[in-house]
Amino acid sequence: MHISDGVLSAPVVIGGYVATTALAGASLYKLKPEHIPRVAIITSAFFVASLIHIPLRPTSVHLILNGLVGMLLGPVAFISILVGIIFQALLFQHGGITTIGTNALMMGLPAILSWWFFSLIRQMNVSVAGFVGGASGILFGVFILAILLVTTGSEFIGVVRIAILAHLPVMVIEGLICGSVSTFLMKVRPEIIGCKIC
Amino acid sequence: MHLPEIDRYAYLSSVFHRCDPRVKIVSIGALIFCIALSSDIRMVSLGFLVASFFIFLSRLPLSFIFIHLRWVLVFVLFFFLIMPLTHHPVEGLKLALLIGLRAISCVLLIFPMIGTDRFDLTLKALQSLRVPNKLVQLFMFSYRYIFVFFDETRRMFIAVRAKGHNQRLNIQSLRIVAHLIGMLLIRAYERTSKIYYAMISRGYTGRIETLEEFRIRPMDVVIGFLIVACAIFITIGG
Image (cartoon, rainbow over all chains, first blue to last red; front, side, top):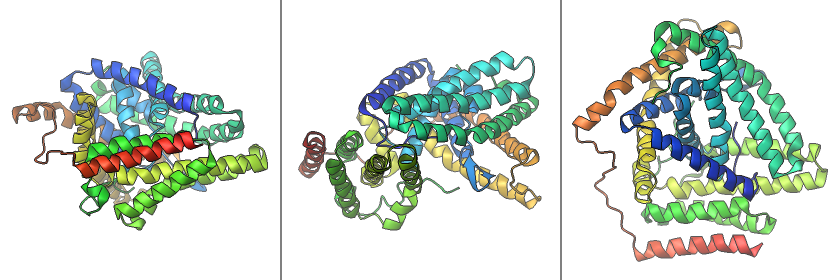
């Protein structure tokens, strides 16, 4: 889920950059130098994991996993997602340079929410917490996408409706995958999931 | 899955390959913003022509460019299909055309901007443009390990396929993918604990040091000035 260059209006683009700079600045400031490799390497693992395609007839969808980044890294997830978004724009031409700010908000804010939901529910049931965390990552992402497009212009309402519909199956797949990943991690290495990294 | 090799043709020689990376990032970056935010179709078309001309000047193979255009073409096609149906038919097409031209021009400009330098030199240029050092380090480490995990993921998928796994959309298949991702994360996590100290003990300070020092030649100033003039013209011409 990315917005390419050339869709959003100037105020939305600038607003996205301002908000992202503020959030990224705060997370960078809090990030200790010895944690940089950890955040970076988990970022690249997620970058590669998001290249995995799941067949969904008649096409296929790729995983987004922003919820899972949140569950693994906590609030620092924002900076990890920002790096991922910049790489996707520069290396794959997926997304765009002018929309780095808005795309980072669209994926990064839900990641922080996912972390919050996950740590709230994990005591009860890890699979359910993982599902909620993964699905809410997409749900809030689509929600922010809708706000950004509608703020740019009312002519995008049709596009917003279709984007929401298209992301419903993605949300379910993502929830199932994240639920399963968190159960797996809980069995194998419980210390790496759901804790704040720094 | 394919590898992100934006700098595969960084060894070629052209006007852009010889230009200082800092000049390219600042001037072409400004041009990208001006095209993306312009709402005059004539100015955006001019931007598209400029972008195509830059691709021609950069001498990058067209097949390489087309592979990277896939995503943005799908995106533009989506707008061409949806906008006329959900919005006013003629106005919708006009808007889709405007969005499409802007999106494609911006993507094309990424190639002369960073496709004409080795990626480590681009990062060094960002460092000397005062991008926060922690962010540059994050870029550097992530970029390096993308390739490591890419190979690892490919090996894992070959292994499960050899055992009869067939990627479908059912719970069983999703669970296998989830376990592979879980394994990938555990391996990533285990690597991280030692890397930083290993780097420190080898004298790592967090700064990128390369043998090549950047130097802005008079020619670079001229190129940068021309590109920025183009950006200004696109903004105020409309």
